[in-house]
Length: 113
Image 1 (tube, rainbow, N blue to C red):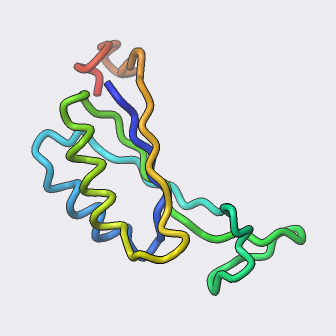
Image 2 (image 1 turned 45 degrees about the vertical axis):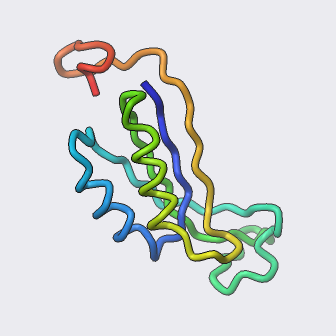
């Protein structure tokens, strides 16, 4: 199993979420509103937020755990629908998940996803 985390522009969330929802067998997606900065330190961004004298940019983080076979499809969908071609489009991170436990049923592994 793999965990895919993607940091994208808030304006791209709808497009990305609709396309992820359409993937057969997609277990679900967690969405969080976040803020941060990249290499450019948010200096030239039009949507920056000043907090405690540090400039941040609002972004959305998507998190999903999928079987290994689904990783490329999910990453490709996020890449395609979050892309604008401009600085600050975001990042996609893929990590290995050792185990998952479903709290309600105590199921483990892929069945818990």
